Length: 374
Ligand SMILES: NC(=O)C1=CN([C@@H]2O[C@H](COP(=O)(O)OP(=O)(O)OC[C@H]3O[C@@H](n4cnc5c(N)ncnc54)[C@H](OP(=O)(O)O)[C@@H]3O)[C@@H](O)[C@H]2O)C=CC1
Ligand SMILES: O=C([O-])CC(=O)C(=O)O
Image 1: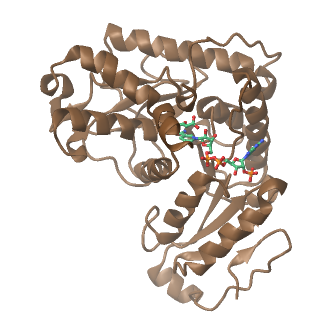
Image 2: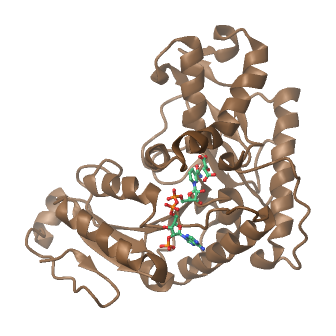
Image 3: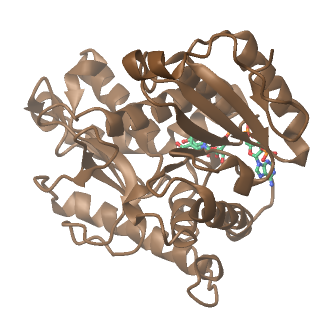
C-alpha cells in the first residue's frame, strides 16, 4: 500500500482506510489539494507534517499533498513522501510528487511556493530577482492554466514580495487578491520583541502590522500595536527603543539567526506559514488584524498601486481578506513606509521582463537586503 503517486514511479493504490463516499459526506469535509514547492527544503520539512497532521486545516479536513521538486531534489522528495507515509496521518489521503508544475498544480486550492534559489556569494540582488523571478513566472503560468480558479497562493521563497507579484502577473485568470507574500514571520518576531520588552506573554500583544517588503526596509508598526488592549507606546515609553532597537531587531532578525545557526529560519517560518493560512480560514478576532504581503491596487493608505506590500488585513475566515482602514500613520511610519515602497518599485522595474511590462531597468537601492543577508 502506498499513499504516494507521481513521476510514474509510484502508483496510487492507497485505499485501506479511505472513507466511503457516504461516510465522507457525513463526517469529513471534502478533500483539499495543497501544492508545496521546494518540498524537499528545510521549511517544508517542518511544514508538510503540520499540514498532514490537521494542525492547519482542522481535524475533519482530509488533505492531498502535491509536492513540487526538481531533477536536483527528486530523490530527496521521494524520501520526504516516504516519511509522510510512515507517519500514518489519518487525514493525509494522498501524496503526489512531481517536477512539472502543470501536473503538480492541477486543481490545487492552495499553493505554498517555498522553493527558490538562495543568494550565493557574489551574486547580485538583480541576478537573484531574475533567477527566482523566472521560477515564479513559470509557476504563475502553470497555476493560471490548471489550478482551482480560486486558488490561494502563498509565496515564501525570496524575494517573496516581488516573486509574488511576478507569479500574480503571470496568472491573470486568478484574482490578484489571492496572492500573498509571507510577512507573518516578521509579525511574529515583532510580537516576540514587544512582549519581551513589556514583560508580558506573547498573547497579550496584538494589532501588530508589518508594512512593506520582506527585507530590511520592512516597517514593524509599534504605533498601532497594543498590549493588553492599550497602545504599545503607553506601555513601552522608551520611544527611542521602539524607533531604533526594536525596529532594527525585527528587520535583521533573520540575518542574526543565520549568523548563529548557519542556516535560515525554517521551523519558525513553517509556524508562521501555518499562522498565515489559519488567519485566512478562521475569522480574525474582533478588533485585531494580521499582516500579509498583498496587492496594493485600491489600498486606502496611499501606498503605490500595483505592488505586493505587507499591510494590515482582516478575514471573515472564508479564505479572503479585507484591508484594515482604521489605522494611524504618523510621519515616522509614513517615511519608513515610503522607503520600503521605493525598494519594491525598484524591484518591480527590475523584473519588468517577467511581468510583461517591457524592458527591465535595475536601479536597486544599495542599502537594502533580504532579512538573511545582513
Ligand atoms: N518569507 C519569509 O519569511 C522567509 C522566506 N524564506 C525563503 O524561503 C525559501 C526556502 O527556504 P528553505 O526551505 O530554508 O531553503 P532550502 O535551501 O532548504 O530549500 C529551498 C528549495 O528551493 C529549491 N530551489 C528552486 N530553485 C533552486 C535553485 N535554482 N537552486 C537551488 N535550489 C532551488 C530547491 O528545491 P528543488 O530543487 O526541489 O526546486 C530547494 O529544496 C528561500 O528563498 C528563503 O530565503 C526563508 C525564511 C523566511
Ligand atoms: O533571507 C532568508 O532566507 C531568511 C529570511 O527571509 C528570514 O529569516 O526572514
